[in-house]
Amino acid sequence: MQRSSRIVPGWQGVCLVAITYVYFLIFAQFAFLKKLNQLGISGTHLKVVMAGMAAGGILLSLLAARVSRWRSPRLRMRVAFLACAVASLIAVFRLDFAAAECMSILVGAGLGLLTVTIATHLREWAGSANPFLVAGVGTGVAYFVCNIPGFFDAKPDVQSLVASVLCLAGAAITLRLEPEQTAGLRRPAPASFVPVLAAFTALVWLDSAAFFIIQKSPSLKAETWQGAAHLWLNAFLHLASALTGAWLLARSKVSTVLIPAVAALGFACLLLRDPVSAPIASVLYPIGVSLYSVALVAYPSLIAPAASDAERGRIAGWIYAIAGWVGSALGIGMGQNLGHVPVAFAFSAAAVVIVPTAVPFWHSRRREISLVAMVLVSAWLLNRAIGATRHPFAPASPIERGREVYVSEGCIHCHTQYVRPGTPDEIMWGPVRSIADLRRDRPPLIGNRRQGPDLSQVGVRRSALWLKMHFFNPAEVSGASIMASYGFLFRDQRGSDLVVYLESLHGPDTAAHIAEQEAWQPAPQEVAGASATEGEELYRRDCATCHSDNGKTRIAWIRDFKRAPIDLMKGPYLYLSPGSGEQRWMQLVRITKFGIAGTDMAGHEYLSDRNISSITLWLSQHLAQSTAVSENITPSGDEK
Figure 1: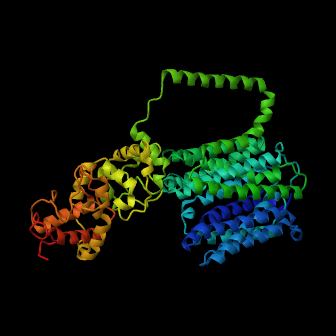
Figure 2: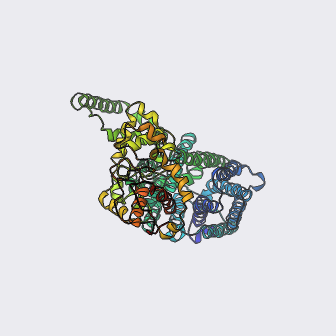
């Protein structure tokens, strides 16, 4: 027996697999990206940096088995570990774009050389007792370690340093690396290379898309990766799934691992489309990832139909280049561009994995399968026929149709429907809805960013006429608006349905919110900094379109107003009650800020206290010219 076996057979293989996976998961996927974000490298620059990593990974994956000067796998791994250690150590320091690009290429090249070399020669360091267990333990331990809360949530510099130390430990292991005995190694039935390559590519694609979607969605991230409870659950699920995958590989075909893996990942991706189902997806995702990851490690050396190290190296190189790097890039691109995994793609990925196994089964059970398929199709057609004659679909309500227009026109990309608790949102946009209430929406329209106002309770703040005017000419109705015109929607029913939907958006306690607004006061320091000159500019931009005789909105829609907007330079001021100058000042401030409920007068909630005070200050100096208001309106009641 070799000396290494006197400790624990296969311990070298376990360490090599675990260190490589930890480096890839915690540094290449997390710490490095966080570091780039801290350095302000984003947008096109970020894509170029990550493309460099992919290019280095693909190139060295394909060349790893062909490096003639480094025939020794121990030497190749030692060089790769040292390259990775240097890269993660450099990441601790402040980098410019050029340095980040060079380091990214080094990370990709190191990982490409390392993964292919380990996968090619795993049988030499796993032993013959249970080599699949080595792949399973190494993979499971890596995922377990990466999900330990203190490590997962550590700062990027800490993660980078730990990754560097682990790589140095890996390089040290290669100095005393000795092959295990492989006599009597049991292998499962070999699986053809091309179908397996396609299956791995589909699985990595799904994995990367789901990973990116979760990372970029706060609501999904909160239900999957945030908090110690979630992380510990993920850690144990990964470990248990990796060990299960190893057990299945040792006793059956590779398809018995890949099929449940694609089922778990596919359903997880579909469930991520609805935040309500995120907790279930958070269980399926680590199961699917660990199952296929064990097969990805074990296949080239232990399963692939190869008779030599050179052949195994070529197989490993193509798998890691195409499935590992290209599949990952495609998955990230899907998550970035679509924000979800299409249903058709999830089923297509499942077909890529399942069909090669299903075809032989079809040939052996053709008549039985045909009979079952005919029964199922007949039942489906009969159900459609009965449903069409007895249960015709009721037409959707205007609110439902309007909601569909809201989604189809992409309103979600600029407007949220989520009042953020503990922020100025609450006074501007309305009471906070509970998470349970949000989850009842199908689908939830929380939104992914806010370039315009929150619309979760817009029906309280805006009249149907105001919404229609705004859709026709946003910049005219709201002077600071960058929104495009949607007047074309009113060429058919879509525009009216959209208005009806928005008018239906009311908060849980409208009366209480209005009472809160009626008690609101601007910050004293902002009132003190008010400028009449600034107020006039804001008035001309935001108010004059309705409140002057020649206002464009007033002229265009004069026949549709419930009550024509008053010319504020003339009056009468129906909503200013008699009282002291200070009382009228505060009334005018609140009307300017929040509008007048039940009328077409909209508020300007998005303006700052200083802006509101400046508009009110300028108005107070001009309202006094009217005989309807005989005394000055001032913040303190004093004459100005």
